[in-house]
Image (cartoon, rainbow, N blue to C red):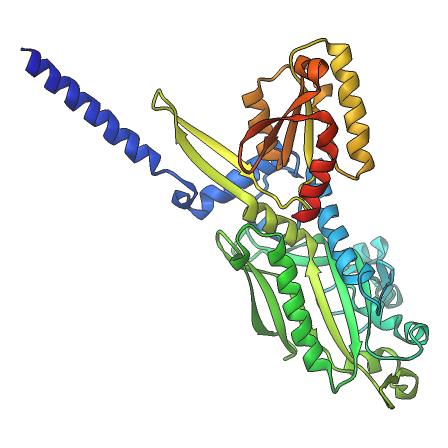
Length: 443
């Protein structure tokens, strides 16, 4: 009788063990691309990376969305690092700024967004007599930043004493239409997408332009991979546009397939000569002892698509089974320390509220002086457990969370949690600032 009962217990436990092992197999690799996309959209809206109704895969990839507070900080960090590397750390690269609106230009007429007088457009729709001069006087919204750099070329050439090579850089919003044809089989609607581009236009002699294009392809691919959890997701391949211009495209492998994030092309001298009305003598720069009209290399990155790429790259989904055999789903954004919107979250634990808040405020100021962004969790009025705080900050991509409690008041120790290792340790508050500074700088 005892043996029989024991066998039943053994069989029951074996079934439970088998079920537990099956559940343990759940990991990020078991999620298909639709699961990953839905999970990211949900997280981005919940944690204020993007905002808007009915966010879809197409809307994300085409930039037709608004940023939330954390998304804006993420994009700002990406742009700041781009500018620091491409402009501030190079001798022959200078910043420029071009207008958003341009008068009608044949270089922009095809596929560009235009501002047209409402009265003229209404007359056209009503099939009345239309003032053709009004239609011709339309304003074009710039689709890229190339033309602004080309227009600034001659003045910039004098700035560098006519010596080649040199580059002009700009970060700015551009307006690129994309078709949406979901309303019917024959309906095609154009929606304007505001995308932020980071552009370097590099002017070099024809003799060295091929070398420089190869150089920039290597540099740009290394830059994207530097911040990635999976560097191999960023790749490069040869490309050719509708006009037959050859170049290189940098891609990111999204869950549904590859999408371009940066374009590098050698436009030779045609666009430069055309913009400055064929006056080649004023365009010549010095290549050693020779005077030559330079080739134009365009290096243009889509920062909005880059933000979405790094969100997908950093997202980790896991399913863990607790002691009650319940499945707990967890999302973590393991953003690179340079990109994370907030490096540190600062919270209060148990203890006298007034004194703990004063300590938090002092530490907040000290970290801010070191340009370490801090999420002020101690200002929250709703109490959350440490486990709930960990879930929240993992989804926000916060690297470290610090808890100030009554132990801090007694002996100066704070609890420090690392997002990537989930390890918690006690650190003296006097060491926190230097530790975080070194950690971020070495990343």
